[in-house]
Amino acid sequence: MVDSYTDDDISMLEEMANKVRKHIIEMIYGAGSGHPGGSLSATEVMVALYFKEMSHRADEPDWIDRDRFVLSKGHAAPTLYACLAESGYFPIDELKTIRKIGSRLQGHPDMRKTPGVEASTGSEGQGLSMGIGMALAAKLDRKKSRIYVMLGDGENNCGQIWEAAMSASQFKLDNLVAIIDRNKLQLDGPTEKIMSLEPLGDKWKAFGWNVLEIEGHNFREILAAFKKARETKGHPTVIIANTIKGKGVSFMEGAVGFHGKAPDKEQYEQAMKELGVKQ
Image (tube, rainbow, N blue to C red; front, side):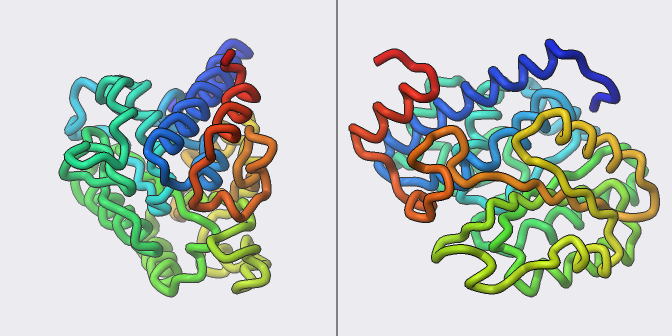
């Protein structure tokens, strides 16, 4: 975790985010399937967690005092895999095996196979409950570990999310941070047309959470929010990160069609060009 950062730190994180985006596009194109939109929108938050905020050890994945990250929106697995590989949990070349038979990198995270994955996810609505269990265990064991759970905004349609939200508040889990990737699009269209979430912040506040709202592609705002969450006592924190689905690739930005569709060859080449890769 970090309480201060320099311009060089921000530059490092921005470079890593661009690198992660390249991995995302390469993985999904190579596999011929996947979820680019929500993977790209979640990039900055996950990069900030793995390369600045969380205490973790790639050479000791089961280190007892580590912080833990649960990717409840498991379809954004390419972002998680890229962060884990760049952190040293497994070789970067292994990213090319995503969604292949026998690969440790399946379409959704599998904690039984992949080093650094804390929870097997993909069925929407379950990750926050998992995170609560981890946060409770840390409290009972008197550990300083912090638990971070990333939720999709459409995932807030699930009743289990709100049951979990009540529980976290009841148990005063101030070592728990939920992050909502608020890109305002889900599989079938805009969240506000499918099942309106607003006023989202007020709802979480009514459930007893400390609510922070940020621009989810701005590293300074992301790191400041994590710091405020650590300073909050007696309440869990939810960070509503306003993001753009498909961020970083022009034709994917705000395009619901790229929720779960791989780019074709022409689109792949354009995306990589936009991300600074010379063809």
